[in-house]
Image 1 (tube, rainbow, N blue to C red):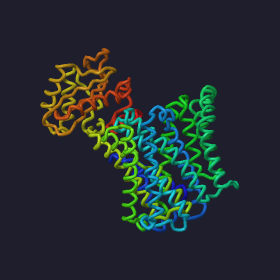
Image 2 (cartoon, helix red, strand yellow):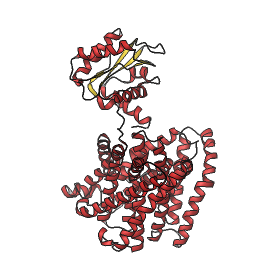
Image 3 (tube, rainbow, N blue to C red):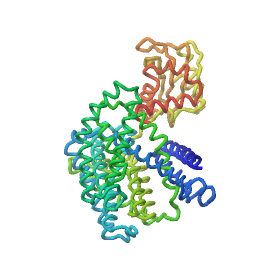
Image 4 (cartoon, rainbow, N blue to C red):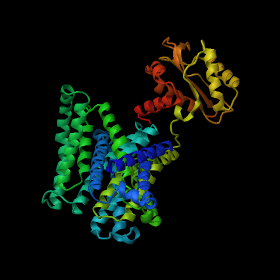
Length: 559
């Protein structure tokens, strides 16, 4: 039953996570909704016996699930730590320092002050120490979600811009300070430990651990990684070392009196700062954790909480309002103090407002320690999901920027021809026009004439066996993509002299010239670099082509 329950969580979380991605939202949104549906909110209410059998409240199965969840969240924080670039904080200087500090201090004071002076507004501390409760709410409203922020900036192609660098540097400081503060709060809450350290001793040990990891251990890791890569099998040796270090550090911080995930996070920070930790290793860990373990963790959040019974609309609105205002005023105001334009400052505030998985982990740990009750836990989870979902769209609206368009969004199943047969360029264009006509809702002859006229002005062979014939049409209201594979190859006058085996036809509205440039660039990314010839043997259906497009887009960091 434990294995069946685990399978149910993983399948439901992956399916709804994929649905969330297709709707332009973070996968974590769908994964948490899957857990809510499998928990007492939905499955428990409709089929209580099945819910109790799959997800018992106690016993060996519950202990096993808790162990898997602990492993999943520990390695998830390792991945988050690997994304941290300590050098970026130093390079950004004054702007990042002001934004990060104001983005921490203002929300912390707002949250802690509200919990201390108006506890009835958020349900009160209950049985928890009022000081611990106030400190937790301040810390919870100060934290940002580094992985969500990085993903949003990549999607908007702002990651390497001036705004992107300031946001990432600020988020790094935010995460580091937030986890240290939360480690202190856990110690004050009296979590179980394996020693007799006082709160002061736990705080001192935590700060000493942080200092050791970012100095001595960081130096050791930088020198040890080349040895591991040189004398062990690739990439198994480095993967084993990375995960083993994360688990050992997690055990150490758990022993100190703070949660295991803090140790894994710091291990990721120290290891990820070395240039010897290759991109392949980072991606392998990220893919495994994000695809298998993280969905289990986030999908299990709703298994034992009745979100319907604990949902308090007033409390949710209050938490969402103070969280958003605190970040916008703190980070946006800090950016203005650093001399950034008002529009850029507001965009930074919205970017830093994404709470995502970090907020949910904070809330889950606080609930397990009795610091918060179920209604506040539900309110914090909803706030994390809403702020993550609206961070990117809000930035786009403020900066007046559009999300980059991709081929897969405009490619219909009927617009793929796995085997073109025309012997020359005009014939190939005619074949592509015929399969694009249905999607474009235009006669094939009209498309053929427009594309051929553009082709005669300048050949559209890009090189490396790829051609991108295209045309801008006044009658189109959205882009249309058609893809054909030609096994013998067609001469499209490529600069490198190659015959083209992948032909990607692009039809775009005349009123949107930028979308044509974006789609041509995406075609070069997905089909260039020698991939065109490989497609002839690996792609025979629309589904396989779509899988190729998504894989290539993801590997480039924009998926």
